[in-house]
Amino acid sequence: LGITAEPTQFDYDIGELEFRDAMLAANEQLIPARLSFAVQLPFCASLCYHCARHKKVTRNARLMAAYVDALCKEIRSKSELIDHDRLVEQLWFVGGSPAYLGITSLGRIMTEIGQCFAVSGSNSRYFMVEVDARTATPQYVAQLSMLGVNAMRTWVPAMSETVQTSINREQSAE
Image (cartoon, rainbow, N blue to C red; front, top):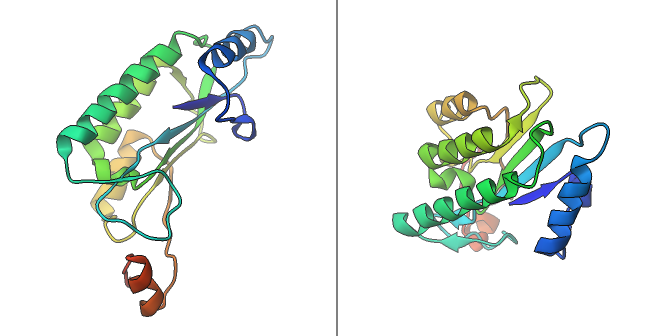
């Protein structure tokens, strides 16, 4: 779970002590810094050769459930460092293919975040999930909306059948 005052300040080289000190210092600001979360959900149903993200191709539900359990534990531990007057205004579920976890798991993660942090109710908040256009049904999109997701990103790497076959990501224009 990456937590930062501004998305441009995220740094993978920051260790646990530096993170703790930065969050405690941010809590002391006169005007509380907003929060932006990037939640990595690295699971995919199949490997796409164009993807540079950390990913795990699996159909093992126990492995994915254990990951969600660990993620929720991390959310709780990080929330102890952050004052509750700091609003979560941006949230990105990135992959792999986050939607592959299913609406129940995404809902559990959203609930955990909502219980542990002050979540903005503003219309200007940005809660985004990456969605595989091949599997995004209108019903699924409606369920995401009910969870509070108000943006989604899909990606079509190319319309050429040759390119789609070579990267193992075949999809029609529809």
